[in-house]
Image 1 (cartoon, rainbow, N blue to C red):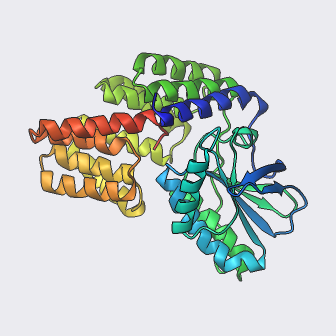
Image 2: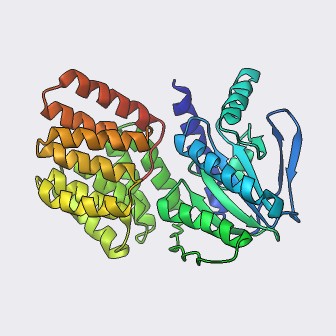
Image 3: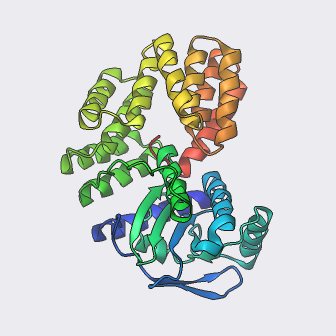
Length: 363
C-alpha cells in the first residue's frame, strides 16, 4: 500500500478517535508538550511563554504548501525573532522516522534555510492533541498560552491575516487585521461522518461517500461541507439536478463561500455554459490569483469551448502554483480527451487518482 495512503488513513483514524474531545478553538489554552528535534534533543513547549507570540505549525515534507509556508514563516522569524517571535514546526508525517528519513529532512530544511526549531511528532500524539485534520495547520499562541488564531491549510485570506497579525505585533500598526469569518463548528457525529465521506471519496467509493455525507447532514443540517461534497460528486456523475439542489441548500446556509461559488461555476461549465462560467471565473481568479483550483476550472471552461491553447496555458499556470491538487490533472485529462490525445489524457487521469488517494480537501 502506498505510504502516503497509509499516512492519510492514520491521520483520519486519529481524528475520528479524538473528535469526541472537541476542537481546539480561538482563545482556548494551548496544550503543553515535549518532543525531540531532528538531532534528538528534547524541547518542551509549555507555559508561560517567554516570547510575545508563537507560531506553532504542523507540516509534512511531502506537502508543497507546507514547505512554502515554512519558507514564508522563516522570513518573519529572521525579521522578528529578536523582538519576541517564536516559531515551532511540528513534523507530523510518520509514526516513526528512520535515520535516513531524518537526514533527508535535515537536508531539505537546510536547503530551504529553515532555522527555527523543527520537532518530530513520531507517534502523532501532538497532531491528535491539537485536533489537526489538515496539513499544514498553524496556531498563533500568545504569551499567556492562549490560542489566538488557527489556520487550516493556506487559504488566501486567513493566511494573509496570519502574517498581518505577526507584523502588527512587532511593527507600528499601519494596517488593521481583517476580522476572520467564524468557522462553523459542526456537531461531533456530523464531523466524523464527513471525514469518513472524504476518505471514501478519495478512494472513488462514491456511493459510500454519499451515504456518509448524507448522514453528516442528518446529524447537523447547518453543516455546509457535506452538501458541497455531495454537489461535487453529483457534478462528476453528471447528475446536475441533484447537484443544483445541494448547492442551493449550501447557498442558503452560506451566501459568500468561495468554495460554493467554485462548485457553482463548475456546474455551469458541465451544464454546457462555458462562456457564462468564464466571465465569472475571470473575476474570481483576478481576486484570487493564487487559487490553483479556480485557474484549473477556468482552463477547463476554455477546453470545453475547444480553445485548447488558452486552456493548456492556464493548466500550466495552475500546475505552477500547486502540484498536489488532484482537480488539475482530472480536468486536464478531460480536455486532452477532447483533443483526441488519449494517451496523455490517461496519464493525467492516473496522476489525478494518485493525488486523490493522498487525501482531499474542499476547494
